Length: 144
Image (cartoon, rainbow, N blue to C red; front, top):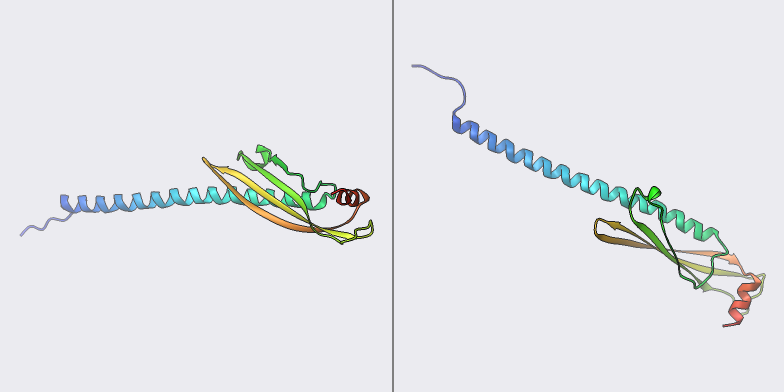
C-alpha cells in the first residue's frame, strides 16, 4: 500500500478561498480604520482652532456687540481643509441702571464649520465673559 503525502486540489482550493476571504476582510477593516482616523484628525484640528478663536473672542473686549462676525481659517493651519467660523457677541445680563463702574455679562456664540468631502459639518460653542462697562456701551444702550 502506497501512502502519498500532500494536499489534494480540492483542499488547496478551499484553503485559498478561506485565505482570500480573510484578506478581503482585513483590507476592508484597514480601509475603515484609515478613514475614521482621518475624520478624527480633521475633527481634532477643528476643535483646537475653535478653542483658539473662542479665546480670541473672550480676550478682545473691543469686539462689537450684536454684529455678526465671520471669517475663514487659513488652509495652512487647517491642513488643507476648507473651514471657517461665525460669531456673535450679545448682552446676556447687565444692571438696569448701568454706570461706567458696573460690570456686564456678554454671551459669545461661535459656530465653526468645515468641509469633510462634499459634506459641510459644523458645531457650536458658547461662552460668557464679564467685563466692565465703557461709556460708549452705556450710550449705546441708552440710544436703544
